[in-house]
Image (cartoon, rainbow, N blue to C red):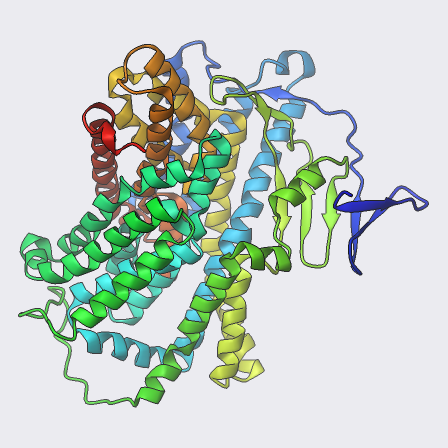
Length: 614
């Protein structure tokens, strides 16, 4: 029996009764004539020139942000206009000549709209809910107690950054991902007394090595589904690349704050923090799978560091140069007060973790693979259920075809927008805020007042996020991103280095390691086969495929700190609207250098350390 049983009813609509008491309504698709557009990866007949034109939107966006003179919303809007015009006028499919440009223009605009909707939900919803929860704790004074409890472990800024940005951020990345750890970690750092610019940048730098296993392993599981490679093989390979950087990133984080001498002064804490996380990351990824890597690593590293601080403290307490030394705080809080103040964040942790479990998502109405297959098998354009609304984007769904240049099997791109209002991670965070308000005894009027103020403060950041995702979806559906990716495949024997950089570019473009894997995963395996067949790589095809596909994900994590979405989220979380350019300039070279280092590791594994490939 299929998921839905059809029952005939009069009129133009049809109703499908699910197994169970609830009734779901499906709206038929009236677009019977579908136009199929084939992506054109070299529209100008010159690969170099086509690549340069394809790079214009990202150059516009990052260039305008880097000047520091153009507000992020305006920079995003200008870059979006550029991406739409290039997609419409340059990257036209061959079918345009016989069908006219107007339907293609409609498809490009549909892609931009689809991306903007995705930017607002679920991405924007996550950020809004996280900032709202933080605002509630600030409004009630409970965050001061939280801050005091963290500082009581160590008043050293280096240690605080490790605890909040790296350990706790890694746990949240594992449980939720998609911008949540940056928003929460940055807000916590500001609340602890960090200057906003440092809070934003440190949260971005720390949110790197855990990303490939974020959201309960979603990037890795997506990579497996796209490439057809074994999930455990990909998990093992990533687990033999990222632990090196999980050990390096805490050192990098502290060096950025305090220089090499400052990092050397707390080397025991760095060893405990990075070492414990790296060991857990390697063990879980290799012997269990990608699902709980960051959750386990974040908890273990946080507990290990907290326990270590009971027996060891830095000789000298570090504060920023322009920061006034903290006066001894005579305020004392009881254990009960501290526990009560941490309740909202414990609720956040529990809700985010539960909302990330596949079993819970299914109960709450998540767009599962089985549902999508059932929905796609029908001609209906929309599905309305009690906890989810799904819409096949008109003029776009299954009407853009990728070719064998970038995918193993030619396929038409899906374009389904899911408004899963209950199972979305942001909804879990919002429910945590609701329960927290009850715990903190906040009146309904005060609750709504804080919510309204948060929505007003977040209006421009949300607009910017919508524009960023509109750019990403426009470049994806028009083939602009694939043109950039194909440019990397022409680098020959040095390609393992560029395999990581391709993932880096993919995340910078899309804002998501999951999206970058979906975008370039097949391209990596195709290139791997060609390099082995051409005797360029001294590996078997399965080895090369696993290595380069994993490199896409592992290299992509370094692009997380410069993707426009993350930058806007960090700015919004720290109240720095308009400072996105300064944040980008701060983190850009850190991102690039770490991506190159990952590429060099992949090269070493391809040519000298092939024994590391599972």
